[in-house]
Structure formats: C-alpha cells, structure tokens
Length: 342
Image (cartoon, rainbow, N blue to C red; front, side, top):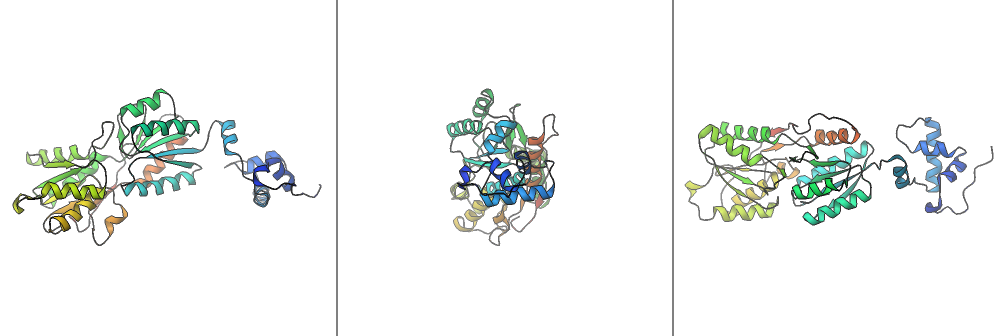
C-alpha cells in the first residue's frame, strides 16, 4: 500500500472524505461510516479515520448528509421570554440531553408573534427535524400557520399544554402540581391566599391559576383574589405586587401569595420586604413554581414546585426518535420543595 500523503492544499474547506480516505489508507465508505453514530465499523478503523481527519482539519458536510438521509439531526428551540430564569434551566437540560442523543440545536430568540412565524419558516428552510416552542406567545394563529404550511415536521410545545391537536405537548401535569401546592397551603393553615398569575395566553396555556382558585373554592366556598403579570419578569412582579397592595390595611393583606412561577415569586418576596416593609413568611408567605437556582439562595429560600425537566427532555428525545404513536407526555410529575418562605 502506498504511503499516505497530505493533500497539497490542506485548507479545511478543500479537504474531502476522499482526502481523508487516502491519508488514512482506507476507503471513502470507511470515512463516511466513521462519522455516523452506531455505524458498523471497527474501533481501530474509526480511530484511524478520526486521527487523519483531525490532522487534515476535515469535518463532514452535515447539510449534504441530511439531504441524503432526509434527516438533519438539528432541532430548533424557539424561546420568547428570556426574562424568566427557568428558561436557562430548560435550555441547559434540553441542549445537553439532545446532544447526548445525537441532535444539535438551533436557538432562536423570538420577539413577537410575527417574529415567531418567520422563525418557523427559517427553521423549515434549515430542514430541522423538529421545532420546539418554549414560551408564551405561541397562539392558535401561529401554530395553525406553521402546520398549514407544513413548515416543520414536528411542532412541539415544551413545558406547556397546547390544545392544538396537530402539536405535541410535553409538560408537567400542572393541575396535579398546583393542587399539591394548594393542599400544602391549606395544611399550613393559611386563610387569605392571593394568586399571582403570569400572562394568560389562549393556546399554550397553564392551568395553574384556575386550578388553585377552584381547589380553594371546593374547600372553603370562596375564590381567592388574583392578579396577572404580562411577562414572567421578576421586576414586573415587584411593581405589580407593590402597586396592588399599596395602602392596604395590615388586616386586609393576604397571609400567603401563591405565584404561578418562580420569577414572579422572587419579585413578590422583594416587594413584600422592600416595598411593603413586611417579613416573609411571618407577615406574608410566598410559594413559587419551577425551583430555579435563585430559589435556594439565603435571601429567598423559596417553597416551590420542581418540574421534572430531565424526564421531560428525555420525552422529547422519544418524540424525535418515534415514527408512530407515543405515550402521553402531558402528565409528568414533579415534587414540592419546602423551604422557609412558606
């Protein structure tokens, strides 16, 4: 066998699989299989090809490979509320688990409804295997437009339930979860709860507010007061709580504020302490939902409900691998994390 030689022009963009094959003393077929997961190739041959590829600076053309296989191994993650710290937790878990299973990710920060539609079109042009919607602005109009144009193969709503029958929802069982929070609040003896909700979207909706109010009504025959914050933002929650309770007599204040997620809860704790001049939990207790990293800080020590994000991310992998019927991915169960705030 002739001695392998380095191509005359070793710039990475000019290196081909044939060059790697010649340098490694093998075939193009061997090179192609070396870069495929679970392909039938010996460990010795794979190492030899990888060493040659590294020395030459070769990387396979993923676009060409996806055209040949009708699969891109790329998933688009569309996120529209980065002010919510839980999104960073989701993204870390999703990207790590997807990468472990052979999928890379395309992250898109969507700004509004129109931006979401164009982002879905862009994702389809890149031939992603799925588009995962993570946020609050994905209404029926956006979902119908994406599905009607067949822009993406699989349209997945993550961490929320969508009533659109052509989407796949992967989410925690919000009704069971918030019922757990309600039962805890009742067991602790709180009598005057107030519910702070997030944006009330029409399609990808959380049922936490309705579930809590109904559960309380069933037990005590009265529905608690509530308010909404237009975005899951800690500073906005601070402003809403501060303004809502400004001028209240001490006896008229709630004894616990149940928040739809942790971003709202963190802002609520700050408002109670620094705007209302009261103590948490002695004067007003607070609960959250999500268990973001800040929830465990000494300043907050937030009682909250932890979503099973790892299990939900693994459910997404099952969806990507599946070509048929799937188990129900809308009933994941998490756990209540009790700390000092309630």
